[in-house]
Image 1 (cartoon, helix red, strand yellow):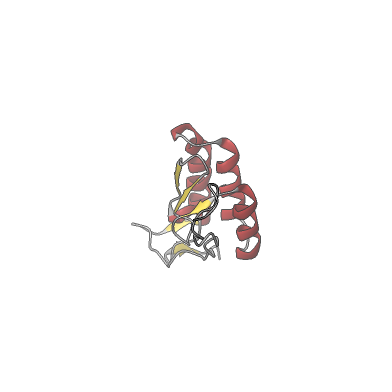
Image 2 (cartoon, helix red, strand yellow; image 1 turned 120 degrees about the vertical axis):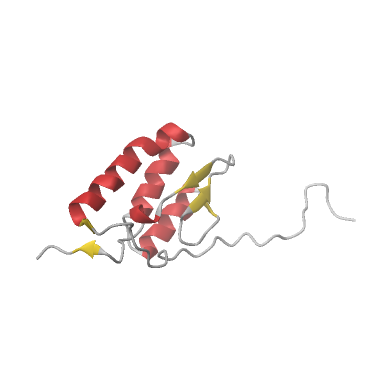
Length: 113
């Protein structure tokens, strides 16, 4: 018999995040087009639900290197469903879905020459 407040130990170790797998856009795009797509996503994402501070943390994590991104999601209390950050939750259970284009560049990005 245990204490009323005790619970079985559940694995509470946060998932270690990683970059998404390589992906290809439906057509080759320039860096400027990619940046515009990202800006449009981040401008509209909070309007679809969730908390603004979590969206801000996810944006900061998406734009940071992996070590800093891990620290950001851990400190914001983000629950990472997919290690590539494409699906996350906050402590209240709100779901946050991030498209790959905000997390990494496509393989068919047109490089500036």
